[in-house]
Image 1: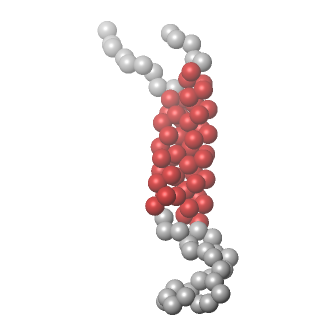
Image 2: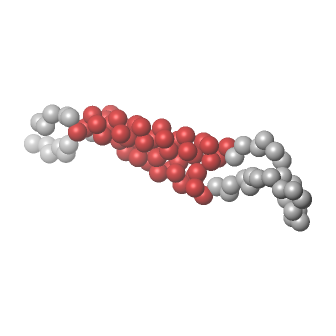
Image 3: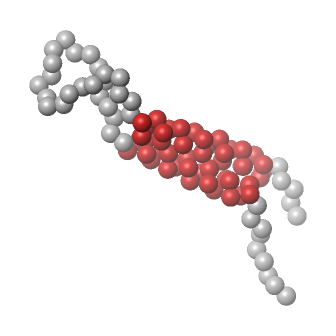
Length: 86
């Protein structure tokens, strides 16, 4: 006689992976250094050279991963909420 726990389905796995991706993407997007933007009538007295048109890719990718993870987690949670009980 074997005792087995509840079976893991792909929906359960998708829920946890989606939540993990949402959290990881949010952490990446929030902790990465922002590129300063703005217009000045004079050159500020700093050693930083501002290059126009640069994109902060880690923030863009982190936010994209967070959104995709949230969508996957929401889809999986919706499927699990209407699943028949055995």
